[in-house]
Amino acid sequence: MRIVSGIQPTGNLHLGNYLGAIRNWVKMQDEVAASGGQSLYFLADLHAISMPHVPADLAANTREMVAALVACGIDPDKSILFNQTQVPAHAELQWLLSGTARMGWLNRMTQWKDKAGKNREGASVALFTYPVLQAADVLLYQATHVPVGEDQKQHLELARDIAQKFNNDFGPKDENGEAAPVFTLPEAIIPPEAARVMSLRDGTSKMSKSDPSDMSRINLTDDADTIMGKVKKAKTDPEVLPGEAKGLEGRAEAANLVGIYAAMAGCAVDAVLAEFEGKGFGAFKPALGELLVAKLAPINACFIELRQDRAALDAILRAGGERARALAAPTLAATYEALGLVRG
Ligand code: TRP
Image (cartoon, rainbow, N blue to C red; front, side, top):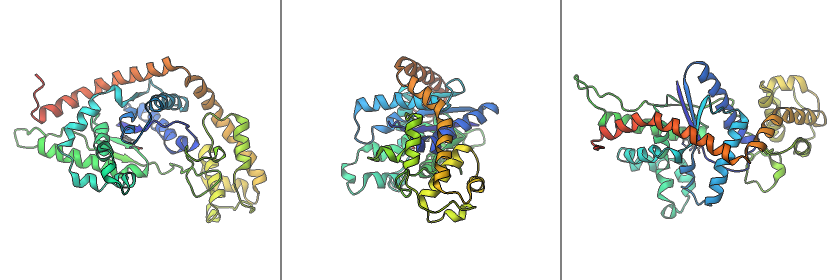
């Protein structure tokens, strides 16, 4: 099993990032290591330039994201942790796959349609070819499994389509005329428990770094008092908690807080409700706050320390980049070869 996944470097990491993606990466890292496989996790900094961006922020966010990943449990000895920029083969393979990807395929991508909006003429070429770079990211390492959120499923299917067409069109033929695949077809893994964490002020919108109210989210930099304060001020309703999940329907804020509790405790929503049935938020909120503080305190301490140690962060990325370049080299060479490109 070889797991490959990427995340765009954003600043202001919060509980939604942790429960949505990062925690699942840590779990998969440990499972894969136990079974003798390999996990590669990278910061998709090359993808970040497909939208308008501030260079100094991108550099700072890249380092901040490494600090967060390590604080949350990504172990640079168990996983290969790096940023795309340090492995030029990502950009090279993207170009090599651009001869195989079809305009029609990219035109159907919903993320392209959403992000370009009405102004397609003004969108960057990188935004349009973004999914080809994403395909290169995983095909380069012969990934077997790619943990992603639901919104990335379509990009993974595209990566499979590109791999299949390339194998068909250019895979070297053996003596029976059968094409030997150049690329492994990767499978998406969409974790069922990828909790969708909603804003603490509005249970119908996602917890987000760009929400103007800091009270809407729990940041990885928040100390214990701040976390307790935010949980106590979280929006709720006047009802008591029901005995099972069905009773939370139509109660977005209540469902969100119970969902966060279950995710942090590592148990089912029904188990949380069995414990708090009939209790109001006056009782539930302090319990949730304490649970969050207990689970996030070690992450917070590590994050705060590591994010200011630029030398340590750059060393992690450099070492990961070196290992990734070595793993990428044979597939990149085979791709050039299959296309008839002479490297001398
Ligand atoms: N596009 C992904 C996202 O926005 C990030 C990403 C880039 C990625 N390359 C990848 C995810 C390769 C999985 C595999 O979330």
